[in-house]
Length: 224
Image 1 (cartoon, rainbow, N blue to C red):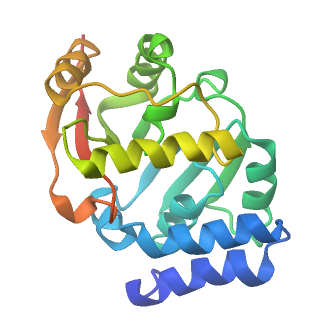
Image 2: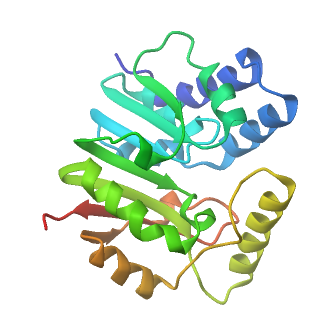
């Protein structure tokens, strides 16, 4: 049985603010992030059932929301940050359709996935690793499986400069990991995604995060 959508965000907030054993700063960060994530719209894009993996899930906000919204989903969040994974695991409270695993996506050898989610994560992954990453994502998806890609839109706007400054600041203070901000112009990135074996469909601005220069694409696996 699914929960009313208007209450799920409150349930997720409760998981992190009152029940989690995470450090105060992490709980504060999740509370602020929860305010800006377009979770209700994201819920309509993600399959209502099936096996879904989020790469770089952080504290697990998106995973927990999607799992609470529909128990027919099997949600797996993976992240390389042990502190965030520890905090994410404390939020489960016996729920069996959400799991968190520490490590890199390619180490788990997933197969027959219905969807992979990369939400604001690609920009912190060095471009030299992209070929391997997307080859592994393509392999892990079932035929017709989808990749939801949300990341920084490269343009000449002040919003873009502020967004990249924020990502740099987060890396410097240790909120995120990575080597700089790794981005490509939209036309170059789209061509690259097609070379990786995906068709590309741009989704609307309703999935944008406030005060971020961003895009959201739904990529569908093509058979080689």
